[in-house]
Amino acid sequence: MASSDGRVERIASSIRVIPDFPKPGIMFHDITTLLLDPKAFSDTIDLFVERYKDKGITVVAGVEARGFIFGPPIALAIGAKFVPLRKPKKLPGEVISEEYALEYGTDKIEMHVGAVEPNDRALIVDDLIATGGTLLAAVKLLVPILALYVSRRMAAFS
Image 1 (cartoon, rainbow, N blue to C red):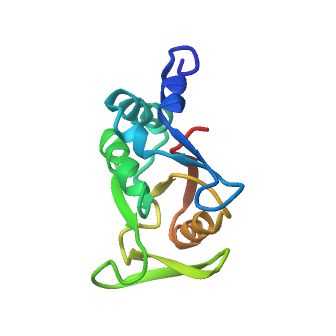
Image 2 (image 1 turned 90 degrees about the horizontal axis):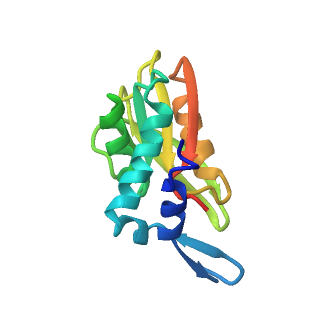
């Protein structure tokens, strides 16, 4: 089991916590230090793969930008396609978009039309939930297309 084999502890200890970043009162969990530790990075991917390999996932949707780090290796390992959810005007061709609220305004995420099909089962990968706006926008992009929505997990363990 993951909790008894030391992987979660190794992952947690490899994530640097930076107080008061990006503003006072925020405890920022910096995953770049996890990426510098090949064992902790591998453990992170392995835990996701173990959790989702037998769930019938056909699509791993990664939210820009850290979802692009964790999503592709998870998708490859479970035999799913990877779909990038990008900031506006970053994807060529026809896209669908969803606007979401930020603390200081609004933003959008976009996905290629046809990247997800009606009977796909999706896993959304991002690194954190702050206001939840990006996650909600990702769900709103995918759910109208999908028959089933599986789940979303944070990549950063705190």
